[in-house]
Image 1: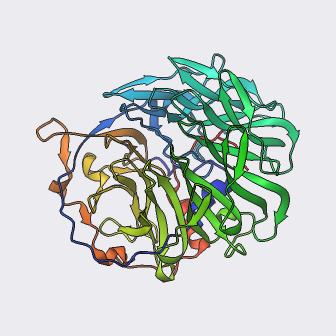
Image 2: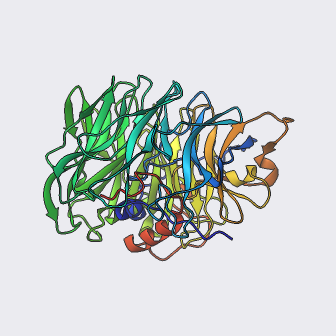
Length: 518
């Protein structure tokens, strides 16, 4: 039996979402939804000779959802080869149990998987984003060693285009990573420069970049030494977050951090909901940004872990930062937004008894409930058709299952996996495109993982499974929309408790430069 994998990212990264809450539930009557059949065929993308493969459901910086599946049906990820990493235990894919197989990025379509070439002198790579035109952003080792950190190889931001791996370079430092690319080939991410910085693990500053037409541009900051760019939309707008100064706040142990929107050479500070720490999870083509922000006074913070503070979800658009509220509790986060401005995420209910997936639409926050037997859930992404994907799980810890929510019903994605297998996000992050195709991870009994694609199918197609046959759809009743969990609840969720639960869930080894730490 393979031991449980443990996430290998910055402590702050794995902490942040655990202490995040939900918005105010709307009290309104609903008609009982009419259940419709949901049919999907599971395509296992396999590996490259090693034990596991993955999709980067979230980027590891703050678990913002990545577009790993485009509207043409192409999915990207990375898979283990049979070769062990020569730099173990400083692996590109580090596991405490020594499972250091070298991974390579891949793309898959129509059931076929093709490996992506590494950099000329490199040996490992992973993907983060694919545009609808087939451009792929990610990172790869370049064959060099980082001169500032003995024993660690360099990692570079990469754009895969027409089958070639393009090294995007750095801003004068030794490391970089790409998070998002649009249809025009504009790439954003973060890169090191050569300016010393006491807040950086790498001793030099981490800066947001925009790469286009062969050149990498430093987007600047909001006044502090560091900034991170996470998203670029089809208008060329870039969203990320930045330190606004280098003064440590006593409540968080970290300088003030605000989200930004960069456009036409100017970085706009989007502000916070009164606290000293905010971050973002999504950007749509209308320039709307969603995320989470600490509240005034930074309540309930764990020092040195600003993601643990009491937060509310926000929506920014047309110059206005809007607090979306919670489901009656103290915490909340907006995880995703579609082109129509519909927002999904999670929030705590009254007395912080449970964290529950929500849909915010036209000013109203609706509790999506949980799968039967669970009392906590998180929604990650919503497509243009209003279909929502996320995870459902016991608040006190236990199995995590991916779900699809549509037409008032929540369906367990494990219904489409072979008997005895679990289909989950294996941590956080799952993606659904506008065609209703879903990228996720299949968990084997021995702990190995395989990236999978769920494709809608017609009755009678070989391998097509009707979820209604397994009675796995849970209706979203009016009582649940008022914040009532499905099963027994905890007495009160605290930041420390939610953090512990998130650590238990986060088992996927996300690839944000592997060894990067804020």
